Image: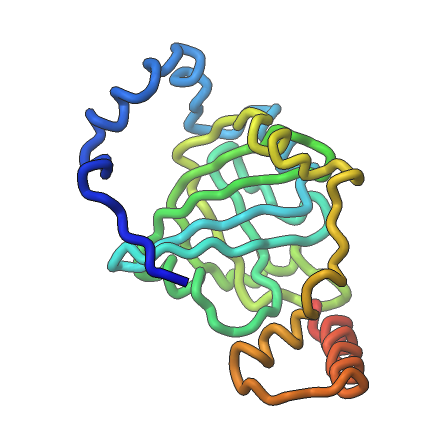
Amino acid sequence: MTEFKVNPDFKIADEAALRSLFPAQTALAINKCQNALDHHAQAFIQRSPFLCLGTQNADGRADVSPRGDPAGFVKILDSRTLAIPDRPGNNRLDSLANIIANPTVGLLFIIPGFDDTLRVNGQASLVTDPALLETMIVNDRVPKLAIVIKVEEVFMHCAKAFRRSHLWSPVHFQDRRQMPSLSKIILDQTTGAPADDAEMQKIDAQLEVDYDKSMY
């Protein structure tokens, strides 16, 4: 595939040039941004089993990490403080290391079946307070730490992206079997070691066993 290069004649280089392409913000778009979690935001968070966590390191390198658990897994400690349990993962610790370097984070809360989402921006810290972690036990497993976020901005996001994507429409669901399994993809991207169908079935089955053992 030929490398794509942006034509500098068509590159937007400043905010003024950017805003010239769009109508001015409406008063509603500006005023909907709150600095605390009202009862609507709290109700949304309590129903959400999934969020995306956006972080950056000290050099501005960005990362987005999915976080999921039973609905209500994000604890609302007060109207301006949230806590997210950190569950076992691949131990890359990208998001956590980024938070230490740059505590500014962005959250996108998603509820299955809802087209609108909730966005929260704030300052995060990593906390090992046993009293807090005890409230986050699942399957008798206590998380090693929690991500505590001091809320700075909260606002609802409209449904356009989800409606354009038909995200919740079963008619538009794709067959996972049309792509290789996760194990096969990672194998190709790393060792490149060949594996026949029978061996791949064993590897995929072991991944499912690992999921069951390491979910919490």
